[in-house]
Length: 252
Image (cartoon, rainbow, N blue to C red; front, side):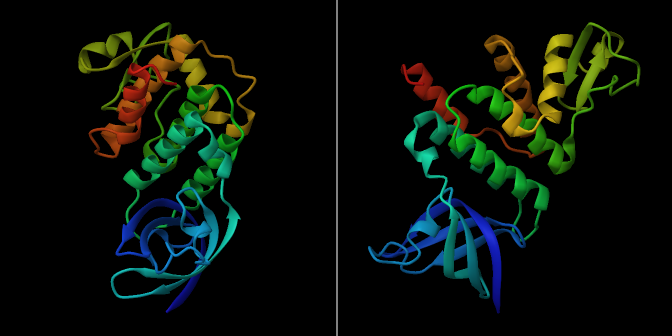
């Protein structure tokens, strides 16, 4: 059966001498595994559309085990991501987020649009990478159905004052009175909460006006990563571990 959909390449694996097996997040069919036959040949028409990050319009043949790429017309290669180490590493993290939390052939229009926009914004980003990533993370986990409860205490429903924490297990902020109900909750203050709300409701291409101190961003992102890992039932993100190892060795 021949099918057509836009898609973004999340992963590529060499198969035999000239072929690739691609993991593509498609608009119509969700995440799919697709064989790009001959994509490694020097003159293959699939060279560009079989690269990681590539956003293309694909024609597939759906086989018994996986899809076969018949044609791929590039819409945007997001090539500038490959030209900068920060963009490349954070871009790899965006792809890992989507790959880790999606199952085969379950489409998500919102998540597809978020990834597409995220890669577009990242392509021209030269600073404030961490702020951008937190903005992506909070939207991403919300689109998966785990939007954190930020307006009142998630446990008792009372208004939040200046003393609060974030409960990873319950998915939101908790008041001082409820601290004892979740000993593993993470320290947070009203300023961090307000920044998180701003990042949730501000478009990824409109984050410039939000000024967040670096130490605060590090704390917020640490909470967000733990919250995401818990909800998608994953132990770690390889891309973040790799970034951390580069930082420890003097990079970034």
